[in-house]
Length: 352
Image 1: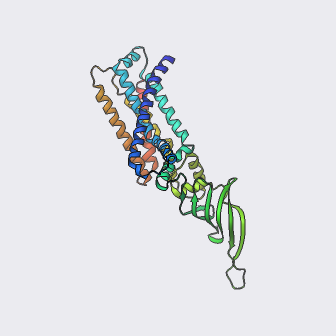
Image 2: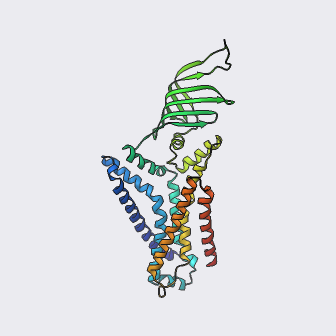
C-alpha cells in the first residue's frame, strides 16, 4: 500500500503543482496587463499587489488545478498501460482513485483553513492598492444597529481599529432618550473607547417648566462592547469576510434580527463550493477507459476539460444568482454540490 501511495501521490502532486503555478502565473500576468496603468508608482506596493493578487486568484485556480492534474496524471497512466496493470494486480477502482481523491480533499481543507486568517482579505487589499494607491483605505459613512442603539459613523479607518465622527442614538421603547457624539473612537479590550465628545440627554417629559436638554462633555468613555472593528468594516463595505468574521457577524446580526443571507452565501462559497472539484474528479474517473487501444486519449482529455469548465461555470453562475437574490443560497450553492456528492458516491459504491 505504501508503494501505491508513493506512486499515485507523486504522479498526481507533480501534475498538480505544475498546473497550479502555471494557471496562477497566467492569471497574474493577464491581470497585470489589464491594470498596469493603474498600479501605483511604488515598487513595494506593486509587489504587495502581486502577492494579494496571487492569494485572491487561488479561489479560482485551485479547483481547476485539482481536476486538471487528475486528468493529465491518469491519461499518462492509461497511455503507459499503468492503470490496467494496477487493475491486473487486483486493485479495485476505488483503491486506485483513493489517494488522489484524498489529496484533493486535503487541499480543499487547506483552502478553508486559510480563510480563517487574513488570507481572506487579499482581494480587499488588492482593490485598495489599485483604487487608492495605499494598502489601508478609509471607508465612507455607515449607519448600523446594535441592540437598541443606532450608530452613525462618518469615516471608518480600515485596519486601524479606529472610527471618526461617531454618533450613537440610544433608543428605549421606540423613543430616542439620548445620543452620544465623539470625534474619535478606538477599539481596545473588546470595547470601543470614545474620545472628546458629549452625551446629550433628552427630557423625559416635554412640558413647560420640566428639565430640558442636558449635555455633558467627556474625554474618554467606553461603549459598543463586542462590536468588533472587522464586523463594522464588513457591514459597511459588504466585502472582505474571513470565516472568523462570518461567525462573529452571525451572532451580532441575529441578535439584531438583521438579514444574514449575504453572510450565508459567503460562508457556503468558502466551505462548500471548493469540494465540487474532488467530486467532479471522482465522477470523471469512473468514465475513463482502461486502455488506450480503442479510444483517442486526446479526445478523452479534451472532453474532461470541457465538462469541468461547464460544471465550474454553472456553479459560478448559480452562486452569482444566489448573491443577487434570484435563488436561495441553499438551492444555488449547496444543492448542486450535494447532487455531485451523491452521484460520485453512487458510482463509487457501484464499483466497490
